[in-house]
Amino acid sequence: MPAPECNLLHEWLRSTAAERPHAPAIEEDGRITTFDQLYRQAEALALEFIAHGLRPGDRVALLLPKTTGAVVAVFASLLAGAAYVPIHPRWPRERVQAVLRDCAARLLIEEENGARRITDLETGALLRDPRPGGDPEVATDWPLLDSAATAVLLFTSGSTGAPKGVVLSHHAVAAFVRWTADEFHIAASDRIACPAPLGFDLSTFDLFNMALTGATAVLVPENIAWMPRFLASFAREARISCWYSVPSILAAMLEEGRFAESAYPDLRLILFAGEVFAPPALVRLMAAVPDARCVNLYGPTETNVVTWFPVPRGYRQDDPLPIGLPCPYAETVVDPARGELLAGGSSLMDGYWNRPEETARAFTVVDGQRYYRTGDCVSVAPDGNYLFHGRLDRQIKRRGFRIELGEIEAALLRHPQVIEAAAVAANDPAAGTRIVAFVRLRAGQDLALAEIRAHCARLLAPYMLPDRFVVTDILMKGNRGKIDYAALARAAEGNVRGD
Image (cartoon, rainbow, N blue to C red; front, side, top):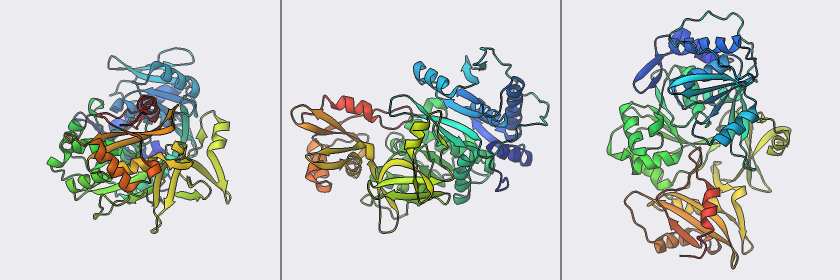
């Protein structure tokens, strides 16, 4: 493993390629790319970038699915001293163009008919694409970078509707990756899978743990990334030992993929983050893989992971699921006036790309320490763990009472037949603010609306009870696989008259 002081992500790959050249770095559809092959391909592409005039600090936009070629492009960008900007190829063209304009990318890499296409966005010229098997001249003057240099811009949805770029340095990404490698004992024998696309911060786990520890990153085929039946088979047949995804994927693998009907002897670690895991589904997951360690990770893109909670073996579905305690590299405090979690430490973003005013609003200073305002409402349990209560920006007032919509969702998720839930506010001209709850049930289950209402009545104050419950097969999702609350709120405007 590279020395502790080495926090340049591409140096990890260089070091591992030198130590374990013939070991498998990436496996994609059964095809192996060794560490030596991966590094040589990244080096050849980086030299082409530099020869064409790419400068340290420039941006390289990757309009690519998560493939071996995309991983090569990530490390080539970093080797050349640039930051990579992942863009999902299925994004609408207008959104893609907005991101390209915003980040002022110098180069754009995309796939065209299965071939890689590299365009200089300043001149419109096409760059030469080095052959994968080529043996480039070794550069003697690679850009000298500090770990504070920008490694990646991750574009997330902005409050104005325009995507905004989260600027993460090599140091910020390294803080998270080094901790996971140490805490979860990631080793060269591990086979890591993370179905998240490159533009999701979860993808830093598999790509850079591969480079740091020599583990094999097993790429999830894009055509099954949201198909739970095939994902369950993939995890078993690919002998995955470490899995990292959003909880809804795991819940769907249990329900639709019949995950619990097979054995997974290689699976030792399951990490999940990005949304609330329904406790009954988590209990079923732990029963299906009793030897696997399950860990709840928390943190917005702006901070990556800042708290963690290893789920105990005796966890019960009636127990709360904390987001845990701060990671060793993180600093957290709670704003006593708002109950908002403030996050700081080594994994913190530098700011939003080219948005100084929005960056200033996102941060606050407490006792001389810089913290990011997460917008998440938390409380502290007696054992010190943080409990998540929802988003402050999803807080509403009804009949004079302040209501956290996330608390309603948490109550719904405690029902054993519910695997996903979303609560939104809708305006009723006659009655004012009303609450609509969307519920997705376990496969093959039926649940009377009266029973759902009774379940909520046992857990929530009367003023918090939804006015209408909508049982649905699909909850609308955004690009990152998270619930699209804006779309649900629009749908709710036609569902405010009660059951």
